[in-house]
Every structure is written in structure tokens, then in C-alpha cells.
Length: 94
Image 1 (cartoon, rainbow, N blue to C red):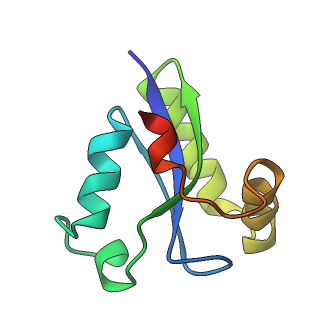
Image 2: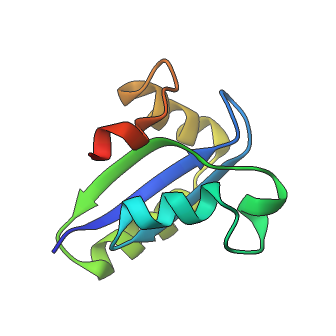
């Protein structure tokens, strides 16, 4: 089973949210459809701009916590290193 750490955005250089999950497709759909009250629904954050795969839930969670502690500039650099156009990566999951 795969586990994921991900970053979603409201748009290019917009509001960012970092999370982790064992079902990335389901989680992104939940963000897009605002099924969970909170930060992402309030700020319309739902474009998948970065993700990575981990072998354990713990590893994905540790990476999520690491990234959440980073400066915004570091997060932007991480995204732009692999997704310079800030494309929505959701379609790549299929």
C-alpha cells in the first residue's frame, strides 16, 4: 500500500496546504468538493501541485510535519522544482 504527502494550492503562488493520506484521489476529491470543513474549504485550496509517495503512513506523516514547518519560500521551491507551471497533477493520478 502506498501513502502520500501532498501540497494543494488555491492557484499559482496562492494559499498552500500540506497533508498526508493513504488515498490521494479520494482526499483531493474531498478537498475539491469541500466535504471537510476547515482551512481548505474556507480558502478554496484544491489544486494538487505536488506529491510524493511513501512506503508507510508514518513516513508520509513525518514528511507532512517537516514541510509544514518550512518557510513558504522553501515550499514554493519544492513545487517549482517538479511542477514549474503549477499544473494540476490530479489527472496524473489516473
